[in-house]
Amino acid sequence: MPTKAKSSGITPPPDRKATPEEGLAFIKKMIQARLGRAQESMAYFKGELEKHPYYAMEWSDYAFEAAAVIHAYGEALRAIEAPDSKVTPASLREYACDRVMRGAQSPTRSTSPVKGVAVELVVAAWAEIYDITRGL
Image: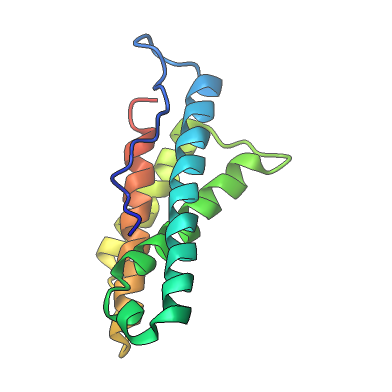
């Protein structure tokens, strides 16, 4: 079963303060690596769902996490790659922090327990993105 514990193999920027361009390139590589692992997890889940639906649903927590990562990291990557993008490490960090704070201050109160879990995992994914951008 795929997990997020795999090493990205990506070299962080040098010890000196990275330029905004270097920082953004590093962030983009980290986002792409995490997205790739999440997409692998979803592909695995889809296969398991077709073979053993009940078993797959019983152990589907990793699929919820992968879907949340695809949602949040995908949004961040689209912003970085937009043709007229003005995203910087600082602006992405600020946006991620805002998403985490809003999620913490206004928790979902849905009658669907699954929706609540999904929203919490998206907030956690934005917290990961915030962490990636710190110090850059």
